[in-house]
Image 1 (tube, one colour):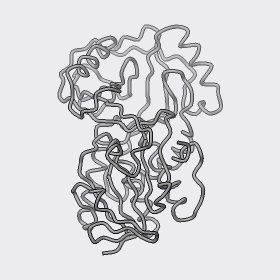
Image 2 (image 1 turned 90 degrees about the horizontal axis):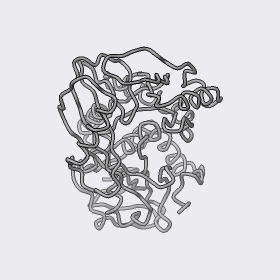
Image 3 (image 1 turned 90 degrees about the vertical axis):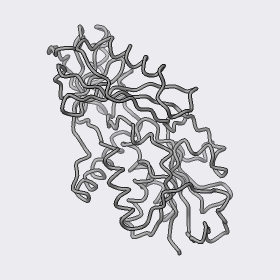
Image 4 (image 1 turned 120 degrees about the vertical axis):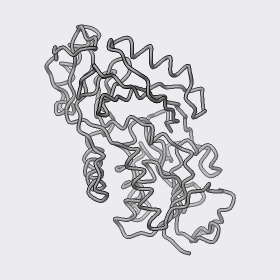
Length: 345
């Protein structure tokens, strides 16, 4: 069997790159073992503003110009909804934060997303003595449903293998690779924090950040926007909400922890006063990089091995753009910006 590409891993990075391959009539096969679940448990928000400092997210406007049509095309392909437009209400903690918000909202890069007015409307169950700052043109992607639909689609085409990829079985020469009888021009590794076990790219400085989330049911919390305070509260419909997320740089397990649960509950209770029931507790490992930029490029020795990784907390925004950049480099020799190229390490 011969294909143009072997893709290892099918989180948002792997999905975005395989879609890029399909659009360009390239053949491929995907290896996915289900071990990396950060895309499935992610909040899935797209938001171009860093809400801690009211500053723009790196390259956010350009990312969204690619990402929003990307998800719309997948909705059309699978006749399902993944992109839910939803505003974000940032709870202010002081008058100083109100003033900082007003100043930031006047900046060119942020003016299309930040409502300059302080929102003083009351909502049952939410403590917000200094009001809210409202973000518009934001939303969330239902990543779990999207990935499930995409895996089913690949299965029906018989181009996904649900098994471990054994790096030691990969034979490489100058013109192609051979993996268990499957020949390909290139391999692209989209393994998330599984990168640590990849002998070709594990020299890269990936940092794994464990994140934990809660799914709660709060009958008296009737909101149709995301609350961002000590944690975010994201409406899922029918009185269900996603609450998160923690950052743990030490715990590398994927299992939910009592420590993470307690942290989420304590932070949630600092501003939510209505009763709620915990329905589910989830955890995943985010593949992050210290400079908060993705990892794109080819191996310094084996030019037919490439990587698409390190999407961090904003994978829904970055993945479609990063996939195009990597594809254009591999197929058209268009250089990768130094900010996101693995050559920076």
